[in-house]
Length: 343
Image (cartoon, helix red, strand yellow):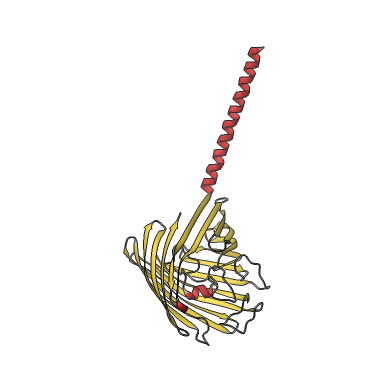
């Protein structure tokens, strides 16, 4: 009897051991699958700013602290999430995307508005510490310099179809979007149509244009457009045309932008160059012009010069000087330094 009981106990223990090994194997498989299909990334940009406008100010500041997660659900289906921890935390992007063909991909959710060459570029790669040109900030609704549209990080909610055609000779984007900005429902019954078409005739050259056609819903009053009141719907159209040159010695990005809000027309132009003087050291120069109201000549031109050093892949330290030449009001000087770390 003792021998029978001992045999049963050994069999039972062996079963539990095999079961535990199977569970461990299953858990490892799940973990390995998650590692293969989920990618986590993040970056931070912190620095110092001195500005002598309106009596002057100087401060250490946090520009951005960003967390990103992407999940490859299947070979053709993915999801993406981006969150900003700086200042007031908020969701920047949240979308899902399906690849029907290399020429046809569909994205649904909240993401960058594909207007201009510059707006879709991550701040990790834009040369300027202030990030985008004045005209891009204003007309793409990035930093709140357009009070009617507000501060929306150049993003919106909608549905987009995009892809590459003719062996990547042409890339296109076509989207239907709320036109209200991030984390907001549409406040009118109109949708924005956003389109972008870029030609790549040479490996180092890209040229094309983009547009936004729609109706805005004013979230605040604007001194640049006093005819439009808070809560009113208004015509909000934009277009742009530009080119990028990417070579070993220098990268150049240049673009002309124009907009019409109600009866007020605005325009801007920028040209930014990054000269690679050493393998990790770049000299930065930029000409940046914006006229927020062509009738009132409310314009400003920024001249930027600086250096950036890539001390580790995707990590850099930057120093820049900006002379702000205003048509109305006094000109000013801006000195900035920034360090970027990314994983």
